[in-house]
Image (cartoon, rainbow, N blue to C red):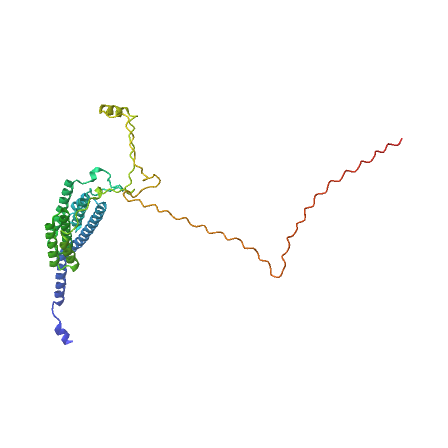
Length: 344
């Protein structure tokens, strides 16, 4: 009891009350700033998530547009995608590479991008064919796109394959244009970049193989538009001749030129080949000689063997066939009975 009395301090309760009051005052002072900071943090997190969602949606839209542009095969549409979606990941770079590839292929085949070739070797319009000047300008456009991609991706390890793709495109373009030395320089740059990035040996092997084959390729092939197909195998069909006798204007023209007004009709080639009985689908080949076939011998017909008689029995005489009896003569009619006179 004395111990507890000694521990009693005067004003101890007031001290505890003062400490509680100071803590409450401290909380009151910092409550609003802390609340504001918490709200700012929450709003910032929500805004950041919204921003990331919008970026992901924009990136997905950019890749969808890129896929549609590549499917169309139009390099102009691909370049528009690269401009409209600048900064959307690798979309602009991929779009420029695809446009450069389309332009290079267009120059190789000598047709406008997207032009179709009919089965007879012609195009829908004459404008689809590229002249030598247009081929050169198309190669220049492709070279500019490849160079842009190569410059934008140089020295960026995450984009090393895009950089090598642009260099491969430049090398192929120079080979198409006949610049063997420029193609070798691009292949050497590919090998150096692949070695610095420690890429797989397959990339180096491909570059070295192409480097060794520069200058040893076959001459340029003709364009698809220059190839004409003949489904009849060289068969020449006659062209209908204009009837001069029924055309007065043509007769006047021939009279003015001193030509006969009634020319002899030219002999049209037989479209069915020599003889006119079979279709000649292989003109220029020698005709096979006609080999006569020997007549097959007719085997003799063996005579029918006679039926041998049984041994020990006399041969039976031929059976006599009795004559067919004649039909009996019809009987004479019976005389009619005399008439009986009536009785009186």
